[in-house]
Length: 183
Image 1 (cartoon, rainbow, N blue to C red):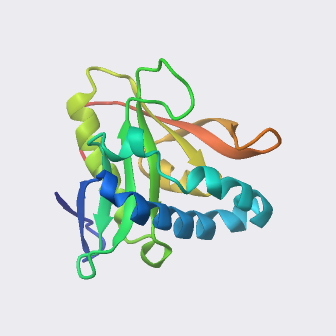
Image 2: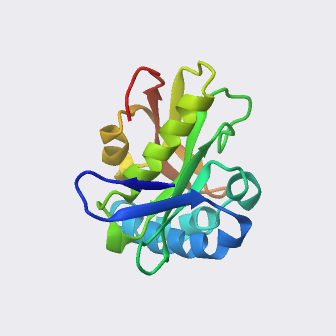
Image 3: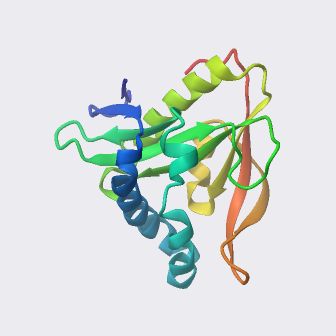
């Protein structure tokens, strides 16, 4: 699969992730989220957050077929990852598509990696939706504007439990699953 952004000449290559990608994705998460989250949440909370966030849920994501990695076109390094599942990351028994663990390398932020991942996810979701009314995401606060540009609307602030004492502030956001929308 290849997706290109209209505002950037880089042509990002996406493929479904495999279990062999776990180490590279975990390194990407550490670099990306440490860079992205510190300014907003502070180092102390990020230090508590990273152990929970930096390890991709291998059993539920890497082999699901709808979680993708993005390769740099020259180095073939994994510079982005993200996808979707029907499985909610926290709750059980929901019938909506959930965007999961989207990250890009800070050296390539705002160069279309997240958009390329979203475009593939949206294509998949439209094909598999069976009339599900929403696509959901639990967004970090700094990622809010990214998801808003994709048509998501914040519904409520909430916290994701990190341990007995700490919560990561995030936003529950939805996008109406209007099957008439174009990519």
